[in-house]
Image (cartoon, rainbow, N blue to C red; front, side, top):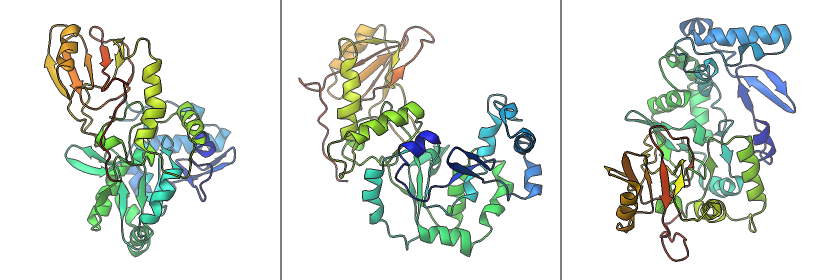
Length: 358
């Protein structure tokens, strides 16, 4: 919250923070998004036991450390706080832009784009993610709701959020419930992707679909990520024009690739995501292929012979390749050693993707 307030949200007006506990943290006031949920609904879901314990701990000591790390009552793999989180979404939809704490908003791009929206029309816009075959607006990428839609939801259909409360315990996520509710009222999500993204620079598949388009949001940013990207934004020569994925690649990603030893070269224990087809976040990586092969050298020869192959990886058993470029991240080997390599697309090692209309 503090990194967001000091970086991407620094110049934004009327920012509201919602949590499961009303309190002040530094200069920020947090509103309890769950306070108005009916008691009978809270009894339906054991997740509210965590909510109650947290409220009691705060009233007693003004400290909630005793609840930190508590596990979900149904699954020891999930945090209780994450399970409770889904109830917050449906009670805060009077806002125009809704983001998560680890969402980074590129305001120079967003402020160029927002005037193109007709707030008199009922619209919800964002990045499409999938739960099975069901598409919904991915909350972590950020979602935009028009003023007309919010009035329709919160005033014309006043109490809609409360009516959803009893159903949420059967759903995985709050953003799924929001999309389903809006669809019931005849509002389908307008896909704004890749402008709204659930990824960050190291995991973006750079290709024609992620190149000339403006960057509006990114996700999974920790405090250091936010500070580093804010510093990059502040250093741009022309801050009046929208930031694009191409500029991010050429300024940030290509520099990291070139700083690696003997690039373009083999990197041990590095996952460049060549094996990933990320349907869940709405990204169908272009050209992802998997085939069994004997060794890394055979992977290299196969990719070099394929004019569409930009990068590849070998995990000790299988060879993967893709025609989009992703930086990836360091990873510890699981079964055998994972090797990754990127290929130069021309003599300068740059990528010359076709321009697409924004």
